[in-house]
Image (cartoon, rainbow, N blue to C red; front, top):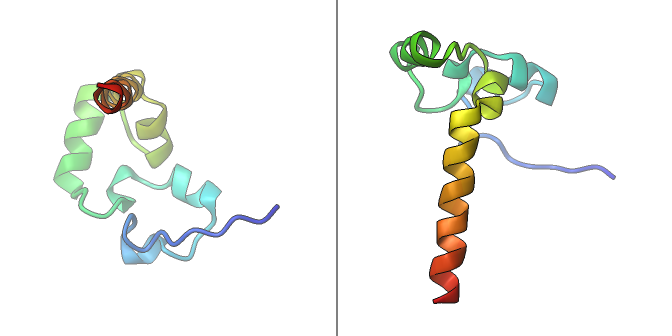
Amino acid sequence: MAVSIALTTLLDREFEDVTLEQIVNAPVSALAGVSAGDAKLLQDAFNIKTVGDLGRNKYFRAAVTLSELAELVDRVK
């Protein structure tokens, strides 16, 4: 099944028309709003070099999971 998604708001212009594999392997600065300085801080603090590294990072994944759980709890209240 083909899936289509507009990534223009998530990525810097040069990465808008590349494959998903290329995006995952791109430097974290390929994400819109992430500067080279931000990328350097992520690398220094967490050894994050690529978009894939960021997505697989256990601390970021834990933060996303906890935030989503909190949103679900708030909806149930």
